[in-house]
Amino acid sequence: MTSAFGTALAPIPATRKAAARVALVDLIEPAQTVLTECFKQFGIESTPMNGDATVRLQKEKFEACVVKLGSNVAEGVMGTVRGSPSNGRMVIYGLGGSAQEALGYSKYGINAIFSEPLERSTALKLVRATQMLVLHEFRRYVRVPIITEVEISGAGGHRFKAMSKEISSGGMSLKSNEELGVGMNLEVSFSLLTLPRIWVKGVISWKSKNTFGVRFDPADERRIKIKEWVEAYLGS
Image 1 (cartoon, rainbow, N blue to C red):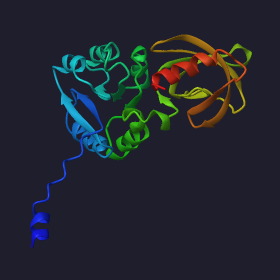
Image 2 (image 1 turned 90 degrees about the horizontal axis):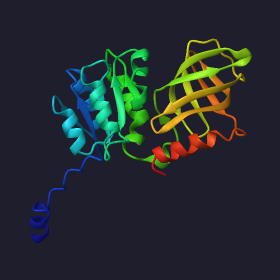
Image 3 (image 1 turned 90 degrees about the vertical axis):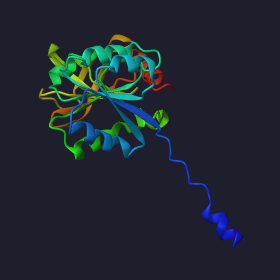
């Protein structure tokens, strides 16, 4: 009886605390609910914000935020985030907007974009791909998703622009409508938040529709600065 009585009064396990928080800034339904459910699957707590977003992002610690591209508050929120001592390395997700609109925020280092209309399956796929970065599992995440404009110089002086998707110490993936081939030598030029504009040689290592990968030339010592930036960004 004593055993049964003790079991009946056993303490109720405490609810597991969320491993990270994401701020949902000025999002309307159903986007807010969809994203809340997607982040929740990975132990990430969503906090909806409205007019007080910049104030809260200066005072409270968050690991990520989602902001509507093209909105009146977008640039102010991103500027606040990147200038914050505690939230400077926050993962920034954009919601909607074209590729050109996303590039307009390059200086703030947007990490990824949720497309509109927002579909749960697509949103969940993006959260799954980036959740290690949000959860600070840096040792398991060797690539940094980040969107910025990249200038490329190819054979014969051909120049064009592309949009970065991910970067690592050894290379990067980009998006462009240019006709490119695997094995093509080129030079890429870009800047990343605290990394001033840099030039580095590379070769196209793979191609898939409008996306391609560039492997940095191991003999180009300028890539060392990229390696240092990636390691600093991941907090290694």
